[in-house]
Image (cartoon, rainbow, N blue to C red; front, side):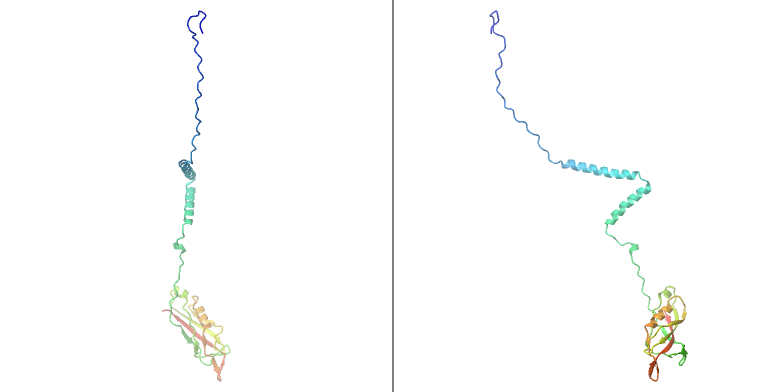
Amino acid sequence: MTTPGGEGEDQTPPEPEASAAYPVAPSEAPPTRGFDWVAALAWSAAVAVALVLGGLTAIGFQSIGEQRATIAGWWKSVAAERPHEPRGDDLVEVMPMPLPGRPPEILPTVGAGDEVEGAVVIANPSWLEPPHPEFPEAAMHKGIEEGRVQLQCPVSAKGTILSCWILEETPAGVGFGQAALFAASRSRLKPRTVDGEPVRGMVRFSVVFRLG
């Protein structure tokens, strides 16, 4: 296109040609990240430290007595989970058995033909099963080494010793009497006879205890 003067060429710049369409690459999605174990462990450690510091802080606000009670409670809970070990106060004390003493002496104390409460006394009784009393522990613990008990016992026609009673006990109160009664209840002697027939009678005898 020329100017009105007809001079020169048209200065209007030519319209640009349509540019070719350039292909645009599709945008790529950001890669998906996996589970961050390092971050998880760091978070767990931070929580644990916070709990410990919180517990120590709580103890710090307690009095000394309360702190000791709290720490003692922790130790008790730990000790409860450990296997039990026998302590000194758990041991059972075993007392030694009494030392054997000398066989007791069985001594008659009445003569032949005497009567005791209407029953004829058996003089010089013949024992089928003599008494075997044990030396009492109470006397042993007190350092007593000798005792004497006099008994009186009815005897059946079969020679069985019936209920005895104590006539004398020296020393008293340390078990000699009970030991003699128990032994007499388990003994047996030859019964007295009249015209060849066994009859009931009475026996009086002393039991002498000697230790060692």
